[in-house]
Image (cartoon, rainbow, N blue to C red):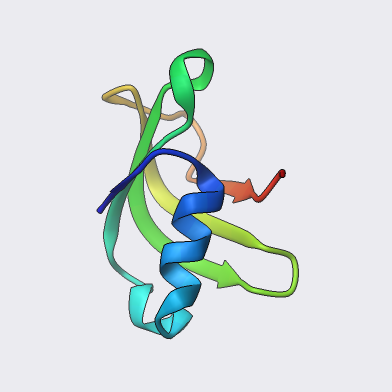
Length: 74
């Protein structure tokens, strides 16, 4: 799955059962300034509108942190 903004990813993930996405490997494009993140979906929180990825990569380079979380900002 390649999405162009965390909001798009959240909309796509919550359009189906959020739990169905757990464990899926996704790429999230955050635009030119932030680049692309890849990782395995570890959590989807509809109340706080967040998506967490484990073992994340940023622009193809492994992140130093074990998990990143994206929050919808409109």
